[in-house]
Length: 441
View 1 (spheres, helix red, strand yellow):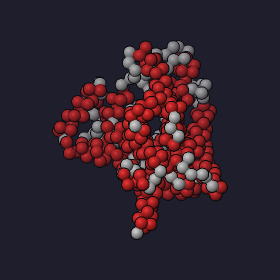
View 2 (view 1 turned 90 degrees about the vertical axis):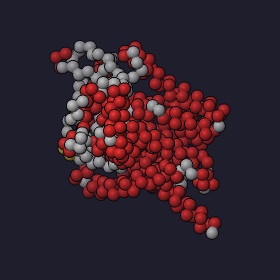
View 3 (view 1 turned 60 degrees about the horizontal axis):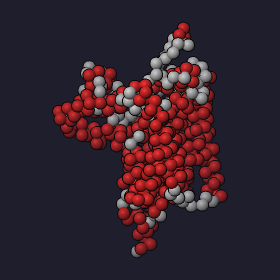
View 4 (view 1 turned 45 degrees about the horizontal axis):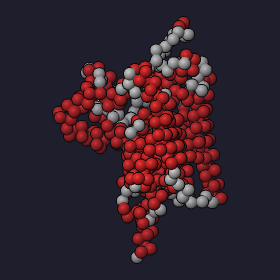
């Protein structure tokens, strides 16, 4: 790791994790979601139910009268999160089952804090890493996400586990660590398939760091681990739908993100759901080709408006505080009750994190660019610098992916531990640069 952890720092870290657990525990027990089994959550629940009780991966909902009837397999959504849910889904949706899932996600979210510090300590000095950890512990987005039957919490954990393993790899490179990192990246991709092209970016970073020959072996090990996890899913899909994946979600991702300001023809009431108001939605979303043709046509007809939307406003929307398609603020679906409305400490942490949000995003963006500048090679150990560059590459990758498609802020929530780490690293770079200049005067 970057530095040995002192006893005083351990005490601070322990207190931070206790605070983080308290917030997650109180939120988990004190939040009541309005109709939690809806939209995406309903799909995930039924996949888990049918997988466990009918040994079929299907989101098909059957009536109580036909509950034992077989269902039709499909490949609409990746199986990572439904596989996790299947541990708990021993009956049709009930408050008891939902409570078990929320408690499990509350625990996973607390584990995120411990693992995230492992990443921070690889490229930040101890107390700077503790500052990043505190932000992660207080994050209302990460806390509120635990109350929903959605992928955010599980994806965040698997992503930080992958990040921790890759950080260790950059400190102690080995074929074993590369392969295990690939395994965890594969699991993360099964939870959220938007990660599927990141190994290509990571491969380029590894080759730059270790050279073509040595880098090739590391990349090969990583890719073997990655495809060991993904291959069974691809093979199953080839048998079921004659393709490695269903393109519906990819088409929707491109389609839903093509409307400037998330509005259809500037119509205010269409905000967040512009595709529902577009009379040509069915025609546009017939195939990947049809949606790409429509996007190209819109760029030809109104180039300035769409360039502004794609290159400037989409990144801002993606990293914004408020969620778009839910209640707003940090909530993904409406809630009847939450400690963020009644508990003073929750209100205070919410106010603090909301006040800090845009400064942190700006520092993160600056850090993602600064970390690639050559002058920092003489200031930071090479291993620490490459961990920071990995974090930068991950954040830039997801921003680019959501510039192409729908930049719903919900999808940035699992990236918040990396956001906070890079924001603090930017402050550390500025501090270290000023300190180095003064020492050279």
